[in-house]
Image (cartoon, rainbow over all chains, first blue to last red; front, side, top):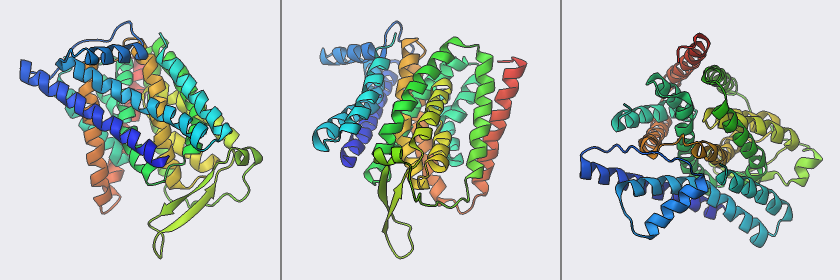
Length: 116
Length: 280
């Protein structure tokens, strides 16, 4: 369990940093300035992540997609950790109490991702 | 106005100073961004994203070293995330002046707490209350600094109900001000629940990531997070925190650390004054 949680956390952060750096360097090479200026408007976190992953899956690779992807991966890292904990407590440790607690955390987080 | 390199540089400095003083980068980042005339609500929103990065990065190593107590973390997260959602919603609605004053006050409080807990010895909890026992809040961790080689240290937590309630407040402050509020969480673990210092700092680190995510959701839905501004800040804070912890272990004495703690105290006072005067 410790190893799984550890790898999810470090893997998420490393991937996210790689995406951010790729996006920024790309932008820098393409336009001569590493700064990007755009906003996320009228979207909740789940919507943002979905949109980013859809664009990535469709192959619309651009500098700002990598930056978005980096941010989405970073935000999903703790979420994924909680989901993995629910699965672990439910199926590996079969601990009803902690399956319940982690499920509550997971439910509240999911609710927050869908907030408008 | 807020160019990439300036944001990146400020974030490195904030991560560095935060790590040197034993806190996160947010406590330095937010005052610095507001001094650059960024709206404090935007600064808070950007800071809380970077909190996810630093806490996840650090937590990964601690969890693998078995220093973190996952059960304590999971139980307390139920309270902090609800607090964070409430806190972030308050920030979105409230007048910015109050945020300045509150930020300064929290900064000074955590500063005082950091100063106070320095030389206290940890005493194992003998008789945990029944609720804490029912929650299975116990564990052990390998102590590499023990005299006579590595040894396993067992501990049990107590006062879980109190801990939960207080954690709601810690989460509220984290969501409200866009900081990890790690210092407050550590106090609750140490003083109320009787966890050993190593376990309390590392477990608080784990909790901070999820708490910050709950707050981030609220800010993102409000359109307060610009990816173009978030990117240099995330990278800068991570770099600064990494450098800071590297330098910290090599420091021969407490002098340098004290200097950074004074910087933090001054930032706290300055924030309160700006809030009172209304010169935002």
